Image (cartoon, rainbow, N blue to C red):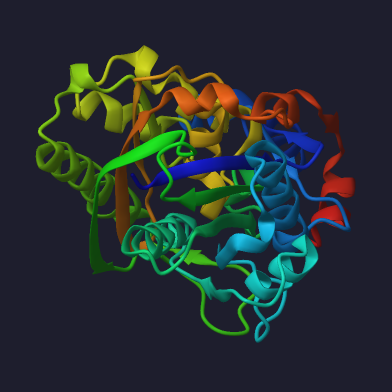
Length: 344
């Protein structure tokens, strides 16, 4: 059996409300909130970045697992805001966790689905028997040009998953996975460019909906499952409107999509987005429930997974829940936000 052995989340404490950003630019906050289904977003502090947040999420995963951390033999970190241009987050996180030196590592970049690409790599290595445990991380302090529509959603957070192959330890068994990729130029950032660019007309139908919906349909077809067979859905959350609309297209009831709407309180955490939704679901999941996870990354592509929760989830040790991070918040002004997040 191959699947998730443990997981962890991390979300910065600071928040900024849509009203505060809209006030600075003289925009209608109510209209923006209704269009994006976003109320506020997380803001990284001066000492929080994709490395430190990825470490914290990984530490929470280790706290839950109760495994020998020295047996983690792969660390993959997905991010589009890595700390160094040439120096991996993954090896630094492994070193900081104290797992020893006997592990393979790499940083992955595929916009917002880099973290789930790391999960796939760990699944492949664990299923083949090359590693005992792998650690996959999605972590971002996402950037947006001041005044751009992305500024209302681009936020910060991290999620980490320990992948293994021992039946007595797997809390969520991988039943099926599928990916699709294409050259769809909806979002990009060239070298040395501080803020990303986006082609708004490509963002919806050609990019997000085409890839996420098609990938979800494909994985369910491969697994021979229907909507009624899925208990929880974790979609990539660039805002609240897109996952809601995707659920409608795929005919998922609103209650199965509810967890994806944590985006309204934390914003779009990019590589961590769909993974944070999964951590939130696992915090309350019950044995034999099925979870569908579909990520999306601009450029563009999607990874889809179907998990079945096992009885082992009852054995997990305590660690901070995703909701506890969501509820622990302190609001800042726009001026403080620009200073903390390095917006200029």
